[in-house]
Image 1: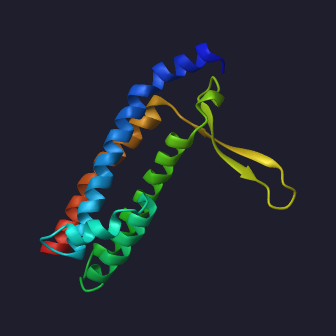
Image 2 (image 1 turned 60 degrees about the vertical axis):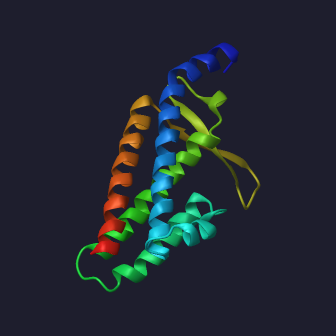
Length: 162
């Protein structure tokens, strides 16, 4: 894309990307709170000390492992809910990484962007992973963040209180 086309892409996507990133931040905050609560009910300080430098992926892993201990004592839906939450958190984080690291200058007319560089291990060829990005895709992912944020809160509230 030339500068003019890139500006059109920016105008088309900047608001939705901004909303996505802001709401992703809210989800990360909720995950931080969940970890802190699970680690020390009543005080977040210990949990915050541990998660201070963790990536979102590491926070997902920590949340899963701490929660697993709690849900292993409970009967019913909790183990399945935890696995589903973990899967969806990993997926939304992957999408966030696509948004943040995308090569926006590579966007095609049908909305595909280069989202990852892959080097073939055997022959060294360079390949590009391409992801289609539309406003609808972004809107759907923002809705997923809303759902995840609420479900994450409900999950750890039930695990701790229940």
